[in-house]
Length: 228
Ligand SMILES: C[S@@+](CC[C@H](N)C(=O)[O-])C[C@H]1O[C@@H](n2cnc3c(N)ncnc32)[C@H](O)[C@@H]1O
Picture 1 (cartoon, rainbow, N blue to C red):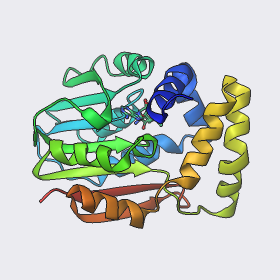
Picture 2 (cartoon, rainbow, N blue to C red; picture 1 turned 45 degrees about the horizontal axis):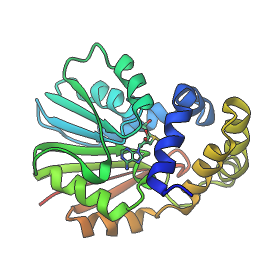
Picture 3 (cartoon, helix red, strand yellow; picture 1 turned 45 degrees about the vertical axis):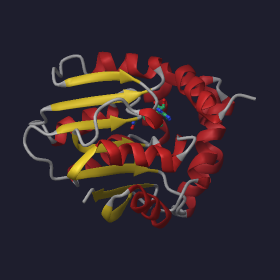
Picture 4 (cartoon, helix red, strand yellow; picture 1 turned 60 degrees about the horizontal axis):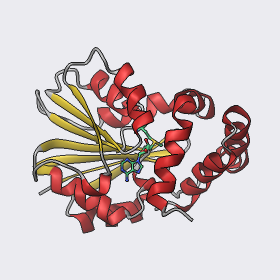
């Protein structure tokens, strides 16, 4: 059996061509609104240098730029090259964006070189959550901010919960043929940390003033904080 890291990298590489379409369908278009709402929670200085960890096809980065058009530099990091290929096309006009193919658990870059480090629907996939959050903390400058958007282990309203359990694997399987991938995506959201647990993990990594906000029936949660 492949280690989790390799399993996740292969899975996202395989589903990359249909990833955006499935996201739009499975969330009825809410994913883009969640990304924008989450990015709007952060007050970034003009010219901010921002890192999007597990940036995938670039949707969180795109949302960030809608909310913060005066961003100085935005680095999108992901270890699945086929996901980044789509991000490259999507963000081609944004000259301040650069894409890096790398593992979130061993990010390149000097300590404290980013004003904001964010991750949209990515941290629950890390093979080692603490190691990933520590890397995010290492790259955040003192006084900088962290933003995580996730489907946490909190229970959504029953209809959304039912769809998450049974609808997501079924629709994902029918439209992509990747049954295992969408089983995983549904299960990983149920098994992931609650916002309270994520807060504790972020504090362990060195962040403080952690706050969260539930979005649309508690389906998604934005968690943010600062590095002292
Ligand atoms: C669910 S997608 C989210 C993509 C994007 N942030 C968004 O909001 O649409 C998760 C992404 O995290 C990436 N990822 C997961 N674990 C990673 C790791 N250890 N290093 C780098 N990228 C990782 C996957 O390749 C995938 O592109």
